[in-house]
Image (tube, rainbow, N blue to C red):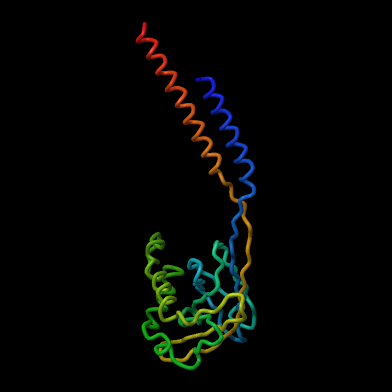
Length: 243
């Protein structure tokens, strides 16, 4: 009996290892990556501290355009953080004019030039929100050296709350045409369009090892071995008692 159980354990282990080898290279997951091409108008100041607020992805930061402060150029920004859910909408935020203006990249029907900030975003104070972007993307001038990680959390939360509140109608559809780039200089002025942009999503298949079957068979083998040693111990105890 003991010998049979040992043989069974060896067989189960061999089957588990074979199953592991067969499945580890075939299991795949797909990661989706977003890309944004921003074209600034002539004489537009570069946009810095850019955040990607994607509805099906996490908040990512911080990028900037690279036009040398004179505009009239395009900058491609690639989000390196993949997600298993393909993002469908996004809202991009940033700063310009030396960090004194707020930039929003919105859908092309958002009426940024038709009304002032305080009317478009009645629950979001302009100066406070500008500071939130600074805090979320760099920590300064609000965080002490070495305290950036925990210090920026209020800024990040404010950006997310804006996207789910006042800014919810400004999202643009990814892979569905273009978006507009708006410059807001204060809470009492209308937005000025300083550029346009396009977006896209790419995918990448990634092989993921799957060891579930292997672990299952390994557990079964361990159970068989335990049973074998238990029976053997009982047999010895019975023999000793008889003697």
